[in-house]
Length: 120
Image 1 (cartoon, one colour):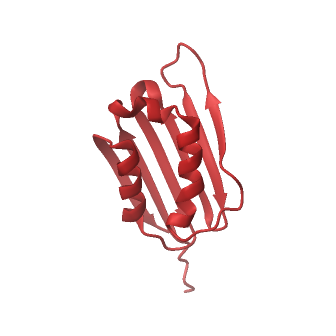
Image 2 (tube, rainbow, N blue to C red; image 1 turned 180 degrees about the vertical axis):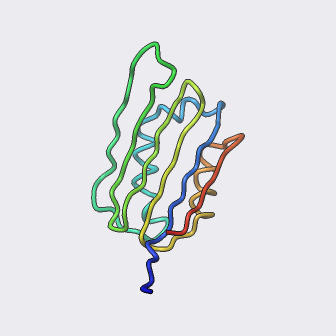
């Protein structure tokens, strides 16, 4: 059988109620996505794309942020009113999950999280 290794997929769902301002800061989110590919040795092929979704008085409003990388993609979805965000990095190339998690923890200082790492 051929090697079917397709890379790694890291997902993070985090609760950081004391960082609500950061979760709605488009400059912070843009800069984060702009820096992450280089942090793990990957190649950006588009600039970050951010889209604010606002449906007042819905507590689920937030930002959907995405960057294409040569190796696949990185995305972040924020929910500022709930103090939550979801992160996703899929790559056909191996990467250091802990380096990404440490970087995100430094920025968002979450209180609780759910992490999944899937070898593809």
